[in-house]
Length: 429
Image (cartoon, rainbow, N blue to C red; front, side, top):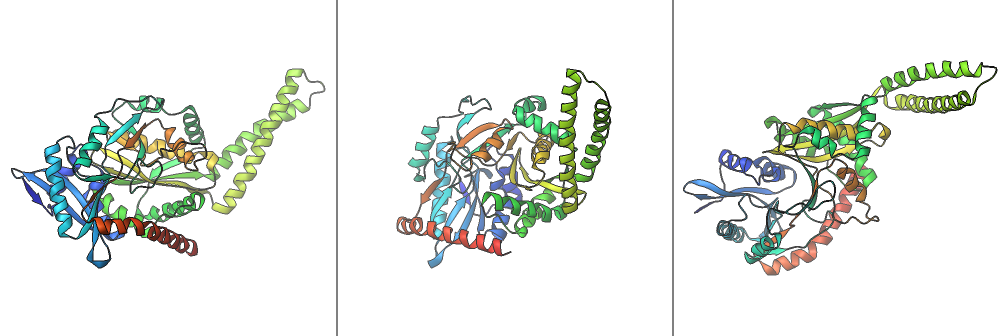
């Protein structure tokens, strides 16, 4: 077998994109994105047998002081993990390359599912023995970094995935009752969902900023999303879904509903005597009238502040191979009772139903205690009926134990410092 340190783009993409373990984080374009926006140097490595690729990996090199570095292979190698001989050979070659490049370790977080539950919380049969897989990787020198429960790792260790090969009716039937009701409410309010263009990224970025302020996390600058769009969209590998609320249209609808109620109420009040049922009806009319008047007042104020139409939801979806991922989602803090976010999700689930086999919500948690502040995120994503999946986790293939020890001790402090600095920069902007 021949190890290739830099596989040609066309050959690399043809192998990775069609492989059953393909992931957008292993794509050639993600390597270029990491180079432009994350200061990584990408290597597209592969293993050939009889002139054909049998394994590949995107290795992202991060330079460190003293001429050192480390490698990160997002979502691990593109390989048959059950073929131990092949995995062993590829691991040895990558370790050899890492030492040559003065990398102190190689990190992987393979797309290996060790636990799966359906929308009814029923455990699904695993494709393989996860314990044996764990032991196999340890035998090759990989250090397992534990079964984390939140977002401590480079990529989420938990997610929700929808099987898009099922009929759309079956997918919809797995939605929670509340989700169906909220989608219906959004449709009654005529929430508009469309696929945006690059010009809409500025609006999407605004929504991401609003979301980060509420959720207390630091996202990225607008250039980050623009670069991502520029790399993936020309190949039809990403879409920006925009959810809009037409405030003017809702106002017209509310006012139209109010008029007949007022007439009916006047007719009842004009009666000299009313029956018990008529009095009950009058009270109900008064309640509905008061509610409509309150709504009209609210939407009048919103119209004054935001105009006739306002973008309230934006979702950035990446498509690669036979899968799609909801990579980023931003939402306004107004008009939440229009449920535009639910409608936006529903629209792109339907859109990708005929395009991919798997739809991934890209991240949730494993710590499901009530006091976990991230539980709301988990419960929201769960409402769309996907399988709850748990991945095997992160592994480090250590090539320099001394510097790896120092790295593990110093990096947490550095990352905390950089996060605080980034947050201050965003707040000042």
